[in-house]
Image (cartoon, rainbow, N blue to C red; front, side, top):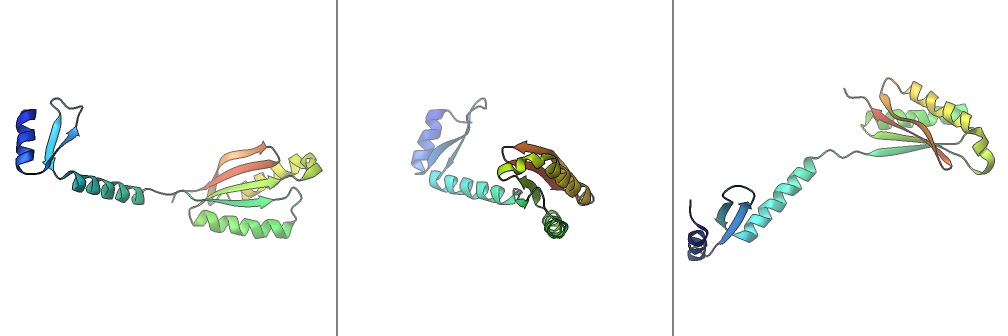
Length: 143
């Protein structure tokens, strides 16, 4: 353990930098090293950690309040594919113009979708009206 002046003198003799690693420790922890190299290694470490972090993908499926059976089945098949790939699903019913009077139909449609997908996904957020959209989130089940 050196004093600050001794550590600075040693660093200058070696033509390196005195870098404070842990300032909150008592006494503060310092290292003698090349500062540019230290920054480079730190950026490299941060980048590696960031790449290992899980990224959440959200896929959207849009319905109308009066979506017929064939279209529903087609979109349900896509929803199953998205959930099996591990993506979250944002299913919403978009109400145009006066179709907002069919709020109940939109809610029934979304709840039916949730019921059909209950074996591969769980409802994260129940159908909720936000402006002209009724939105529901489904996340994939963990295996």
